[in-house]
Amino acid sequence: MNKLDKAYEAFDILQSIDIPISSEQKALVAGLEKEYLNEEVLPLFEQELQQYVQKIHNSFSLEVSYTREGGLDISLVDRLKNKATTASSTLHTKRQRKYIIRVLFPDNHVSCSPHVWETLVDVVRFAGPENVQKLNINIMGLNLVSRELHENERYRVGQKEVEPGLYVCTYSSTETKLEQIKLINRRLNLGLEIAKQML
Image (cartoon, one colour):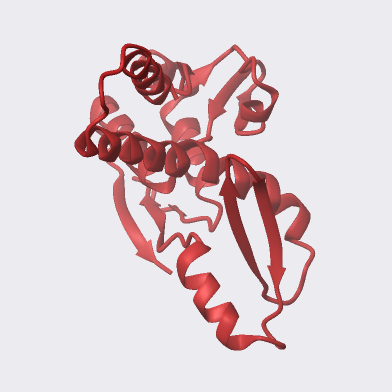
């Protein structure tokens, strides 16, 4: 959230010396907020919620709203009782991942998990965690492969141990994981075939 923090600080400074904030500047900050939500907040929300809802057999929809004054509000939308409301709420509030990542390895085995972080971990294991660590791919203020656990307990949820004492940070969007896999493949010349598999 570093860029966003700096933008908020800049706004505070401008307001403190009575310099108006332009609509263009507000739009840029709104874009940073959207990026922060997509890259950091929603992946964490998805990972943490998954462990609680995976035992549910039926489909359901959640409606999520937030205001600074009222905070976060999450409610269950009843599909059976209010189909019209559900359709509208789902359209505006539900984040859908439209694809997962399919990786074909040189030995012809395929990794294409519905949990995209598992595909990233498979690639790191194949490449060798220490080899990936040397690429210095930064994510959430740490190396993608690190011996250090994130100081923020919430972010540590996304760190998966691939070797004793070595962790892969999977706390990122599907798009980011795809770019990370492509980078690892290119820099280490792994010969992977990487593709999106639509859902």
